[in-house]
Length: 309
Image 1 (tube, rainbow, N blue to C red):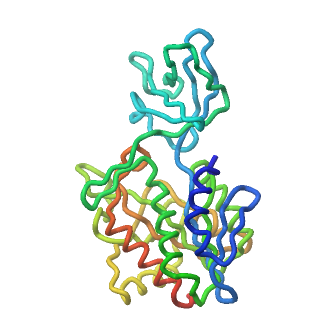
Image 2: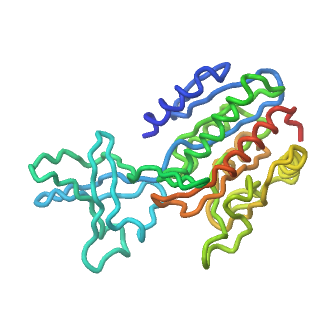
């Protein structure tokens, strides 16, 4: 259900690409340059959400299934927004919360005008806030990756020695599906995913050397991707040559579009530029604007030079 976001992104990039198309699965594919090494840059448009599976006949409460990795301990009392603008509140049975079956969505307006049906999707709902250098929002995963791609397109201004395919992918949160078709269709020589990553800078948080404000995170490894040394060095050397702050990312859980692209056709050397993010998969995902800028600068630097590994 990425079509609304895709429309917004299309309006942002329509003058920044040499060619734009939408593939059969819904990926927005934007080509910049022609004839050089073929590079695929992937950022996913989707976010975690839910789909109504059953409407209780007496109460009208909505039962639902997850679309992507919902965290049950963050759902109680949260709000959702349906495609038609209806706002719902997530409730849970007394003493419940261990199983998704114990949650429901309340869309009662007090006038008996409920019209949400089984099969309708919803996303978590919260306005974005800015706190100094920090941006707090419900879908930094991975709208902030889309921002990095768009800003790199803007800085390139259609000038690159490569043939770059900026792909805004669909259905990453439910199995990297858009990246699979994009990787096969584009058939790149090298690929770069743009996504968020966890941080290790919260009390008793993950044991990892990534923190907010310390620069772009260059992925080394996650459960779905072992980054080839040539791709790792390509990114690290560019960051050091351009004086871009960076940190090395080793993630113990989760993966990105690069995991699917790397096994397209005969295989694609793939890496990932990650934006450090606290509170991933909640309505308060938090990133630092300086990290975002470092990611934009690193991606632009990579694409402004021949992508030869």
